[in-house]
Length: 446
Image (tube, rainbow, N blue to C red):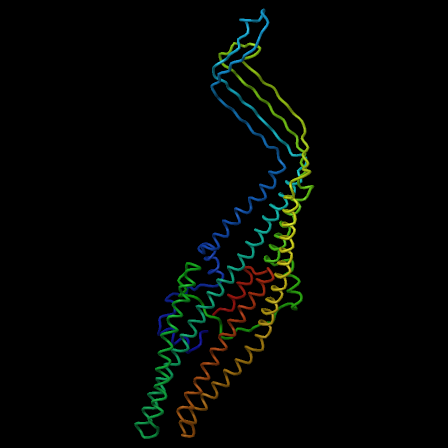
């Protein structure tokens, strides 16, 4: 259930929806999948990168090219012919020439194509891994936007409730002052607390509007019906030890998987510039015909000429001026860079997992301690009110105790939200965040 102070303030501000329908985290994520322009752009990028696999297959398939031409030709020959042929064989031709040909090439071995195909396939697999990670990152972005709206609403509700309490204490202090049982300073202190809370509410209201705008831009939803977290959320520690999470992340994390495929692509590019990468063996075949419509069908200018040819071609480069060796050294340096980037990504990932793991584990004790502190603050507040009523405590003591209560409530709310954030972040870092974990979060909503 909503905390009484939050409920009163949210009703006053009109933050509660008029209907019972509300937005869960899963529903917010589903909406973001269809509206977030960044994610939609990533989907298009994935579709483009998937074509790398088709391009890799094409490198092993035959290439067939057909061509045709139509031209006007005028040919004259100077030749001394035997007397018997003089005047019988024309030495010039003018007219239309039509030609057509078909060429086919089938790679039998092509080191460059093998390396390029490996590079293309690695790029396609890296794109798949990156997109899987981007999908989980979208979940976390929606989670952050969802929690930001909750935090802004809770903060605004608390300060409004604090203002209401301060105004009530101001009226009570005024009544006691009028009866001669209090000092005017008590009235002024309560009034100052109320005025300060009213000023804070203006700032927090703007922050709440901004949080709603960010959530709306991400999901397309208005955010007015976001559900708050339960006050009695029971935090649980991580289900596995830290080393198990880190080990799973080494193989399942989309970030690491994409980096490993990027390394494979870099190594393939280095192979492309090796000597074996430039050895090419291919089968070739072609068929060609040429026609001279209206020709004289002579030996020198026949009406039709055609034929076919087929064979095998082997190509091995022996000297490229040092360019090939330079490009290979460059590719090897880039591959070494990718390897170091992979090691760096693993190191950073392990640290991030440890941070989230410790955050979730420590939240169990922290939230329990803050709940005890909140109860103590409430007891202190009631004791201060009782003491003031019997004139052994001052109005300032009451106002200070009330401030402790609100601060303890704020710290508890923040700790619960941070626990939820750490819990889902841990799954995202290990590559395991899915709709199932979003359902766990939704189960903690009021």
